[in-house]
Length: 206
Picture 1 (cartoon, rainbow, N blue to C red):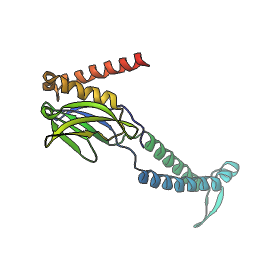
Picture 2 (cartoon, rainbow, N blue to C red; picture 1 turned 180 degrees about the vertical axis):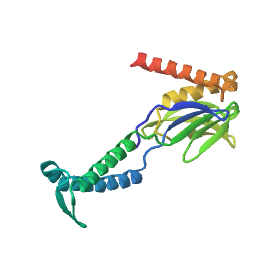
Picture 3 (spheres, one colour; picture 1 turned 90 degrees about the vertical axis):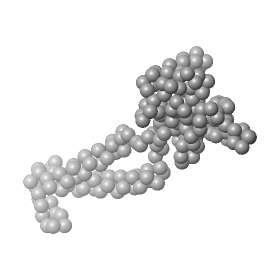
Picture 4 (cartoon, rainbow, N blue to C red; picture 1 turned 60 degrees about the vertical axis):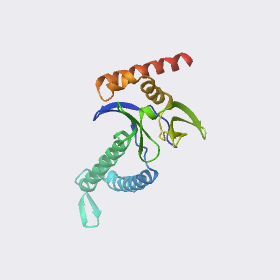
């Protein structure tokens, strides 16, 4: 299970979006780990093979290879290049940005939350409650709407800190006059004011 993290907010195409980096898939991580291990092992082997001769006898000293005798600087240079590529790949995997997952989309007329693989969109006028709810030991954003006359609760599914996200959605639900700013800079500022108030309240409580 991915560790919850704060959502990031931005305005795009007339909507206020709450996003979080997509979790790394176990299969992708495993494939990269296997490739990195193989490449790293080969790099170490090449450097161990050519390194002693390179440093002890000089770069022009002969060394045996599959293609006969070659100057030691040639396999040593290949090993150094492989080490650079390997190190660069590791750093890129650690610090590269990941695709974003949209957790919620707020517009003047609708609110949409991620309830699985897709966003479920609801008119603001249908929402009867917005809250944080404990489900199977996890705190989730819960939005209740009537379906065929019966109250139905939708839960946001995603590795995100629930309370700040819930506070923003709750604010725009309870303050219809502020919804007109959604999708504009004023909506961003409103969301940031709510998040600042939430952070201050958490700090005081802590």
